[in-house]
Image: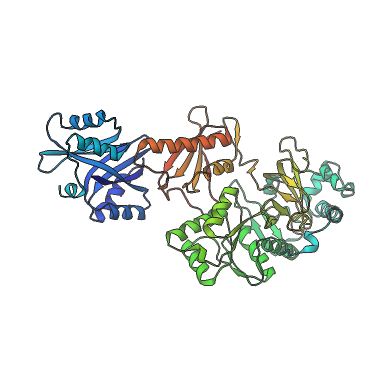
Length: 143
Length: 432
């Protein structure tokens, strides 16, 4: 199952992250997961949100450059070696990971890992073949 | 359509004869009426009678911007101030402004050359000209105004700014021709798109753009986004204002109205005249101005002259699109760079907004060139490496255009300053 992620271009300037989050907050959009890739000049804010389309619309109206693309989310047991197993299965199938970020679900039993592989379909197949559960959009949103 | 066929389609012989006659007359007037010229000519032991052929113009001294500035405010006038009916000034961004004074005959001349220019973009009596050049001391507003009225078109003197209102008027009045700076034209297009206005439904057919340097790539954008024919106008306050030269429908060079403004191209270093076709600094002599004649004014604008009968039927000499100014010219690490070269490179990139700013710094004895470019959805990606690749690509394109490595900074959309008049493209932070 593929999951929609929203990415936002942030200039490396004071208050820009706040501004983006402020727009989402005003639109009553909840952030499920978030990570920031930062370089010396700019940042990319990546998020899984409760309403991707609305988030895109609101951010674009305030002149943010936004992109929606697909990522994979998997649930791993919140125990040592949980993530390692996921990566091993991707490695075996020669699937390249572009970036990865994780958060712990509320009940605290599982960690949710968001993965962006170079080839999303190949990534999903590799994970499924290793018996790893790929989470659906609904499952993520119900967390 | 040609406004003044007799003047604009003269044979080479006729024009040369007229120019010589007018040159002799203006030199005489300058010598007799303007103390500045009297002194300069006397110092060089030149008398008006020494001008026997057009080539004799080389005997005359150049007039620089500094000379005009030193004569501030009215020192260059060749008539009593009571005969001056209008004044304009340059913006004065580089110091005291220079003043241009117009007699009634000068205003008539201005209307004539602007009528010729507007006719080249197809303006006729039934047209509605939305004049979004600034009105006031700046010459853009009034110049277009006089020309439009001379043709008998409906001039909408909206001036620059208030973009939403501009678009409203454009729709409600059925504007057919737009006149403004090219950067403001693009901004209008941008706002129109944002407000969901379908520009193909507008009555707009042509635009007369000038007062700042622009490129072919920018023309393509203007034509595509506003669904018009975008033509280039040239002029300067020191000479008259807009209406010195204008691009005809061929869009291949600007016809100089040489029966009124005599052009020369010089090498800006050696100050020697260059032959037709060679690129150098444009020098202009007003042949018919009464209020403030200028002799061999150094425009600092870089271009070349090309002669021959144009496809449009006009015979007046053409100049190339201005590619730079001998003083706007940036010297970065010893390499000469014109902002237009950077613009050219940027506009070749699909999905890039033509909004940019060039920042020159010298952090440690070495010049650095930074080009800020607004990010657009087409350039953005969720992956850092893709954005880095886009930056590299832009850097490479600029490198192949100017031969220098620059740093590209991607900034957020709408974050670079928009201008209603002349766009500020270069910020030179070097203290030299």
